Length: 145
Ligand SMILES: [Zn+2]
Image (cartoon, rainbow, N blue to C red; front, side):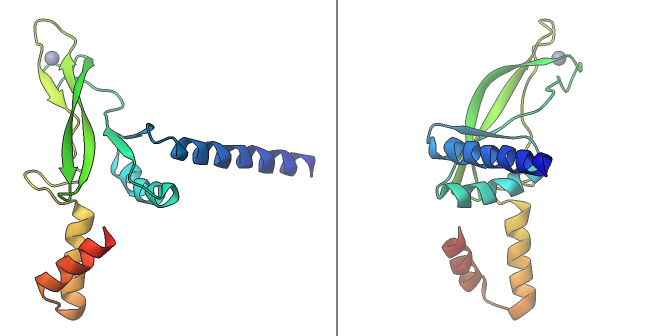
């Protein structure tokens, strides 16, 4: 019984820390996978505002020589044309190589596209369900974004 109470109080501390973290408007949320990205929507609902998102690689390595890569600035990209996120850029630590690369979003947003897979599937589902016009679907989606 004592053990259960201890676990409960520890969980309460975690929840309190999450809310304290979300209240800080300067906080950055680090995303490294599509699962993190899905969880981000829930976090934004809890925070009641968009969060500062940084996409990064957990173990960045050079795509050419496979050496470790060092952080080398960030750039801003818009997902679904309206959600700004920061993309971590890297440079190869091998001085002879020096290849630049940045965190890939291809698991979340298809190459050469601005819209996330999730949003693209929502449009297709809506088309299949009620044959709505694209104009109507886009209005519905803009209300939900
Ligand atoms: Zn390299």
